[in-house]
Length: 320
Ligand code: SF4
Ligand code: MG
Image (cartoon, rainbow, N blue to C red; front, side, top):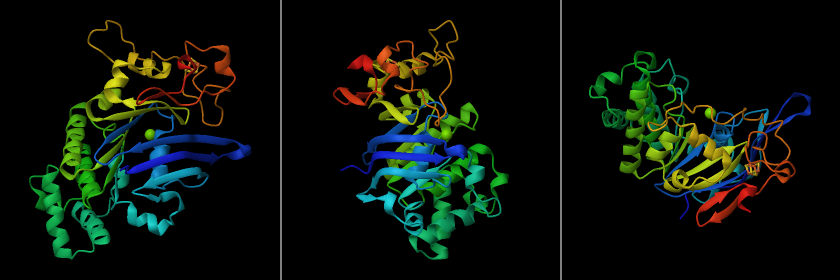
């Protein structure tokens, strides 16, 4: 059974001068229990807005314009803020890029974990204390009793992210949404944090929606991947398939810009140009102004996302 089923999601931002930024513009995908699904794309492609929409954290001038977000059978789009508060943190755990903004600077790490546990699990303070220490040990704080009394600023970036993971998994969520969880960290720490997340995912049988711009991270940790561009999914398939048999010219460009040992030249920046702003997409295919294969019809009508091989979807006229 599907855990998360996003259907026709549109999240728009109403800007000054009657401009509408179609940050997420008709996104469909699903996540199965225990699966790691990656949303990949450059910054501005709509992947963070997709994850924020799922958690219903879109504020004015933004709005979920259309679509369904079926989580465990219920449509989150219609839920009230209060109902969503019960789902966020309990059924859906979240990890963000910068834990400093997600952790409250004036409360100790211990109090923040305990607060989450007491709010969602309705357990006693003593039980929450015991469980919080257990969680901190699990995510790699050997002196957890002392960490309980520390404030976020006393921890390093990597340690803060470990504490965030402890909070995110504290209520056994079915889904963990991780938006660029390691982008702000040193390369050596990044792998440790991603490994920890993966270990916790397996231990607690969570599904993970991993938002990243890093295809190396996708290759290592994800089962399925969706490539986003211009607020839409342009390619979706199993991870191995994406690397062996990429189809969309944008995906190919991303793969070519990956640093590789065999390549002599630095290919970073293989895709020319910039992600278009969400209020001024080109007419037709949204990648047409950067695509080396663009044809006349590409500049007339945006292609549909179509399944061109079993389990492999692509939005491009080259495959029609
Ligand atoms: Fe390129 Fe055309 Fe395919 Fe768009 S539809 S990616 S412009 S070939
Ligand atoms: Mg982002």
